[in-house]
Amino acid sequence: MAKAFEGKVVLVTGANSGIGEAIAVAFQEAGATVFGIARRQEALDEARVRHPDIRWLRADVANSKDVSAAVASAVSEAGRLDVVVNNAGVFRFAPLDQSTEELVRRQFEANVYGTTFVAQAALPALRASRGTIVNISSAAGHKPVPGGAHYAATKAAVESLTRSWALELAPHGIRVNAVAPGPVDTPGFDKSGIPPAALPTVKEAFVKQVPLGRMGSSEEVARWVVAIADPSTTWLTGQILSIDGGMSLT
Ligand SMILES: NC(=O)c1ccc[n+]([C@@H]2O[C@H](COP(=O)([O-])OP(=O)(O)OC[C@H]3O[C@@H](n4cnc5c(N)ncnc54)[C@H](OP(=O)(O)O)[C@@H]3O)[C@@H](O)[C@H]2O)c1
Image (cartoon, rainbow, N blue to C red):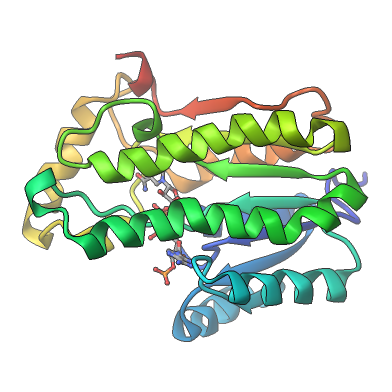
């Protein structure tokens, strides 16, 4: 039986780690040709060893020139682009009085500017394929996060971009949706600035906010990204799907 994404080309940012890696693998299993973007050459090289059938490109999504070159290279190699997953993101939790300029900038640059640069660069190819964009938001995109306000603000921006682009691009047949995961145990937590000794307590505090009583897995998020992008999902746009064990209900 033909797989749903056979003949389709998918670009996933931040595909070398966590949720992005699971998304890239899930699209591959669904038959797509997958391009994975990684920021650091070393991470890209390691990811290539783990997933030799994914086509790896290096780009910092916060750098519009990097992004244009990577997207152009994918489109030129594959001849088309059907799905863009804006997954690359940074979460660095800090209260207001400890939110340095660098911390605020890095999160906005990766999460908001990056999402924008990738969508912009992909637009001509998505218009041609009547393709789709899936943005990765967070439960933090629509819930207050004391001690993580700037991360939450970046994801609120991602949700706003999703809804505006859905309307703006609907005349071109391009669907734009987002998923908003609750806490998922990924390497992102190790890079989040939380001292390693405090990580178990922080994760336990997150678990207490989840009615289903546990953190999610990257694969549990990935399956919904694939479902939203599926070519048979033809009438869903502008939606933010919470995949969070019920967290956003509380
Ligand atoms: N884990 C959660 O609890 C959770 C919950 C809700 C939403 N999310 C969102 O899910 C997405 C993936 O997070 P994750 O938990 O899987 O974290 P992760 O394991 O740290 O993965 C993040 C990926 O994004 C990449 N990245 C960061 N900044 C980048 C940049 N400027 N250019 C290109 N790539 C960049 C990272 O590259 P490097 O390896 O080079 O850093 C990494 O590949 C993020 O958007 C995050 O906000 C996560």
